[in-house]
Image 1 (cartoon, rainbow, N blue to C red):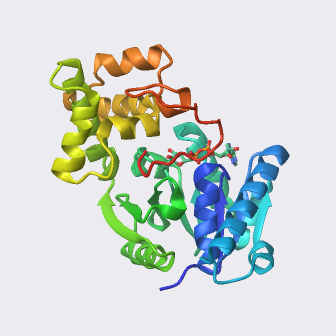
Image 2: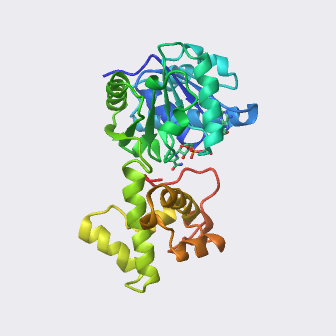
Length: 296
Ligand SMILES: NC(=O)c1ccc[n+]([C@@H]2O[C@H](COP(=O)([O-])OP(=O)(O)OC[C@H]3O[C@@H](n4cnc5c(N)ncnc54)[C@H](O)[C@@H]3O)[C@@H](O)[C@H]2O)c1
């Protein structure tokens, strides 16, 4: 089990920093590509603080100075020319992702691997413009990356078996568990997670039970770590609505967003980050601070 000696991450936001940090701790040199100097400075500060936290917790295995020497942030795509693997983690915008994947593939070595951390977009769509689709797959990490142990490896139609096997190895090497999913809307995790949440919202709309009792049904009855409505508050009602709309278009009526979800989003009741969603939260979550959910 090993990771490539140098790993690039495209986009140093919440997920990109977490992904870079995971590969760094597993022994890779990491380089994060950001869009401008301000975003690069933020990404650097975020990975430095993630490294310091893991050293303090004793989970790093190396001292902070050694780790920090092995991570870099850049705004120059050319800097990714030497990486063995590049993981794209820019915002969930198909045009932006397609553009960035193409730009990065053009500078990568012929034998380098390319992956996307998309939470829901089709691998076929993202691979369409690539010259080497067999070297491309989805690597769907969860938020927050350090404490989430699942990574979905998403195989596009062109993804090679060699890449699937290598990806399984990388995921084990960073201490997480891989599942392999064929390219399909919502993969395994979002599709199942969202359908349960949408049904819980419809049950609330229908007056079946209170939000607390619907959640308790799943926590105590089905051993969910948190209830589907609570989790929707953590993820953000707007984020869940966006995924539901996408899955509705791709998979049909069972993913139709309930009216209550649309109404709450329209009213700015977005969950924890706005102070209210299906539950009331004591303090709105400050922008930029990592969510505490493992779902997206
Ligand atoms: N946040 C989650 O819970 C979560 C979970 C799983 C997967 N994802 C997926 O991960 C991806 C990133 O999400 P995030 O939450 O980290 O977003 P984010 O907004 O926190 O980070 C995105 C980063 O990309 C950078 N960026 C934008 N344009 C760029 C460009 N042209 N070149 C380089 N960098 C650029 C931004 O400056 C920002 O730092 C999305 O596809 C999202 O769907 C998110």
